[in-house]
Length: 278
Image (cartoon, rainbow, N blue to C red; front, side, top):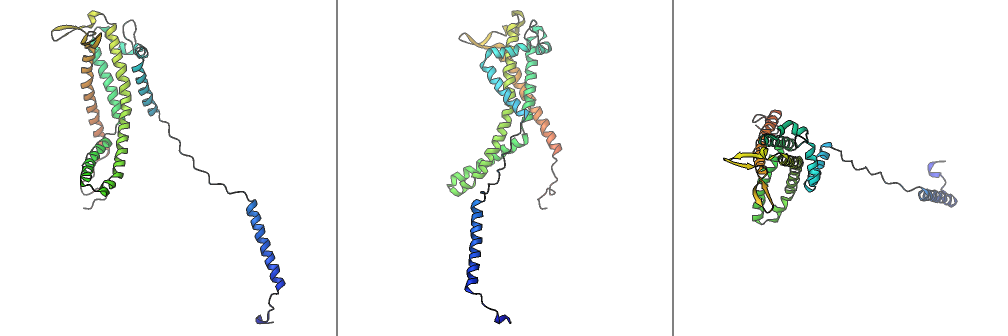
């Protein structure tokens, strides 16, 4: 029998084929209905922030300094632990107390120690190159922003928004780094000033009396009286010790840091920088 002579399928065969197809579709529908719903892909957990002991110390010292400022008894207790008199000896008093016989020298050394530690902390937490770049970018961006505002063109002002957001973020990073150094400064400032005040207060009248400008003054006396209190002489003299000392230490450490950065990041010769066409 040739291909052209093949018998055509009868109607009964077509009905059987349709029934088989309908049965297969019914089975597929039943399987889809009974199949468990597909579960969504598990979400990737957010990365946990890394614990930094340095950040913990900054926050702890900042809160401790704030609590010392509020609670005088707690503040005096920590200062007493450093030693404030021959009868209440401690590590700091044994080192620079000199039995309260040279209070001006004690104040000078205490101020130097305080400013040295705070300057080291400030220099450690501050990226001087980043701070300089942000300051330079801020100055340049301010000029461009003022020109855009004067022009009155909204498209120019809108085009500056991404740059402003980035500059704000960088400025915040620099400020946070400076706040870390300020936390240590704040704690030591309160502690050392309290310690110097108690040491002078526990000294006798002869030890507290000094010659200033040809006149004898009591370091615990008030240079600027106000009501029943005022600002004592020792506070003014100690501030005159600490302020210039802090400026000197910070300038020296900043110069040293910049020199180290210059050595570790040498500038390429002109015309050989990557991406610059000769």
